Length: 374
Length: 171
Ligand SMILES: Cc1cc2nc3c(=O)[nH]c(=O)nc-3n(C[C@H](O)[C@H](O)[C@H](O)COP(=O)(O)OP(=O)(O)OC[C@H]3O[C@@H](n4cnc5c(N)ncnc54)[C@H](O)[C@@H]3O)c2cc1C
Image (cartoon, rainbow over all chains, first blue to last red; front, side):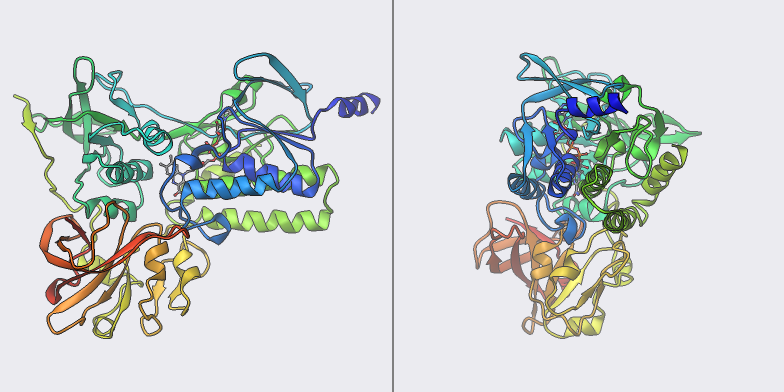
């Protein structure tokens, strides 16, 4: 008992949040509003995570700011943050967590290393783009769709004029649209599967602007000497799960940008480093930290939320963040059990709604595998 | 021999709804609904968790309900074509159409997020859902997006027979 009291005294904050995307920001707001002493750390020079690269209107409901553009949701979350008492550390990378005494190591602007302690740590580090490999994929001019989006929407640099997009998930479709808005010509979207994998409305938007979507096709090669000059594309057949190129169907087309939008995976380095129990769930983007219904990982007091806990959406990331905020506040005695139960049920209801329908059901199953497992 | 091409052909219908698909959608007006004045045309046929159209409609003409993945249902009798849903829909899949704009023409309001915007009276190339040229259109009205971050909306006039075909334009 004594030692734990000592430990509490030594804690610098009641909650350390790593990553200030929609998940981290929502957790910070909820927890701080209940009275928790929070620090929020992000390696970027401004909080908001992926929201600041998104210029399109978001799906969802009013609670999730649907119909509002991603970057504007980011601005709203930041405004909320300014109204509450949260310590914010930007340009700061967390590169290690000691599991036993829950000490977080970070460095600001790559200078001195500091550590801080807390009983509660939330890892909300988001996602990482998954590349696909093909001949020539390391040439300049081949990049992730997220990178292209950051270049044009954050830094105002057009990444290319003639674009081949690989992948017809929502990211491929949305980034194609944004490239067109920025003035590029999207020559086509190439999809391995026999059908479009993103929302049809996103596909319809680029189809009516004249962009073809080639299903059952893939890229074989990016050609060029110092920079991408062309892409070689082939029609494919699936044969017992393996891909067969259809001879004679290949074509080469000049382009100066090949964007890869083949999905995201949880940005889980800190989770691995901590030794959290991980499980591979394809519908959630790969290896995900196992967590219970309170978003608590296999180490008590270490929480996960947002894309790092399974690739989903900003709306679900915000709800998971709020959930962690409520759980920590309750455990620290800032809210009554009766109230906590109400908040907890409300958030879970919204999460369950967001994970219904044909696009959400696999994620819902994936999440329940995780929570049943732990 | 590797074929070199300059343009990928617009060969199939992936991502393009057919009229048959559309008619089965609860947000798509019936033929009689189209005869009466302005009406919203909601080309949304997937169970996406999304409901701002329901939220924004001042006449309760659009219902999504719970769960939020329900498709939007249009009550065309209540719809007055105020364009609020066109401006907010994140899928950019709502249009407002006045089939009988005059004897010969229909008026189609289209969400448009490219720049520059066309000018009123300008001649444009009206396109179908596949981006193919359909006919000439004339810009009737341009509603610029506002701070409230709705999309810009352009109303174009096209010959009546194309009211269900034209869904985009360029110039
Ligand atoms: C093209 C595209 C379109 C999308 N459209 C939609 C949409 O319409 N609707 C929707 O709901 N969602 C959409 N999303 C998804 C949404 O953006 C993400 O699900 C959401 O941003 C995830 O939030 P997060 O807080 O988990 O992670 P992120 O937003 O990725 O934030 C993570 C943060 O953690 C920081 N970080 C990571 N590691 C460290 C570290 N070690 N130290 C310090 N900081 C660290 C990062 O800098 C980042 O700021 C879209 C995504 C993309 C790419």
